[in-house]
Length: 116
Picture 1 (cartoon, rainbow, N blue to C red):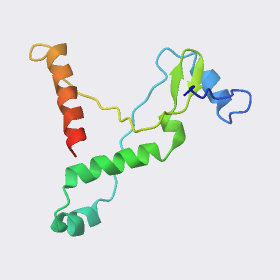
Picture 2 (picture 1 turned 90 degrees about the vertical axis):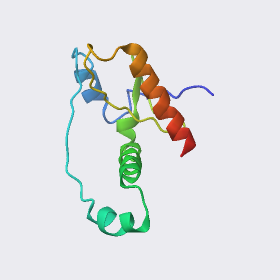
Picture 3 (picture 1 turned 180 degrees about the vertical axis):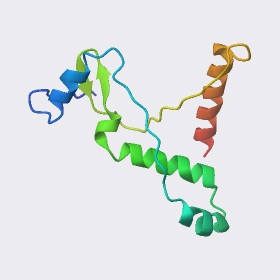
């Protein structure tokens, strides 16, 4: 299946894309507080794994906003393909860990996700 390329002549965010595309590092991070009261008071008592439920909710929220799922392919913008991707950050100290351990970690995470 051919990948769909966003038409920059009609895309509402084209001006922002063109402006920020010139930056060396046009990324930012944000932290928000979310209300997990019901999850902790009701669903946890029903046996729901709180950590897994939060991961699911975060992924559902991210994938509920199409712009958060867009990617660059060269000079083009493409929407996400079928399936869900979640980026995660892993902070490590190079005296303790190298690329082999990081790769093993992400492999173990992917295996665990397949088992869920």
